[in-house]
Image (cartoon, helix red, strand yellow):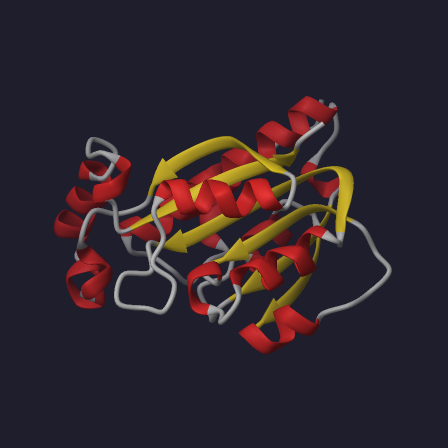
Length: 198
């Protein structure tokens, strides 16, 4: 087994410090490390494709694990991205609820997934946007693309509306922790790890 990079080293590579972003980083870190353990390999052996809506991506922390990361930033680039590579892990970071057609985005990402690969999706619930998600709608979207849910977590409770409050350690921390206690439909977003259905 490989010598793992600690979570503290992982988050040190990210410029994001608010509690909900750290919770997202922890979810990604655990999903990738568990996937590496399952494969009896190291995250350093992985090729990873990340499609991020904006600077909220996780490219730098994933590179800290030693992974080879190809990053795409922006909706249009994610919808039109093509190469012949197959990626062990694909991270779709805060983009699903912001594209005109989530099915087109997911279809394009899954076509680049290695047969036994892992997909990680982080998404706000889309409230006030064109695509408002519920857990059921998300799971249906994933199912249409042959993906089954491996792990699921609420992100925050209500502070996606205020970046200033969200970045306050006590208030943001309460929001991130309280989200673990509320039903999924009350959360302001979710983190999901997925595998291809056999």
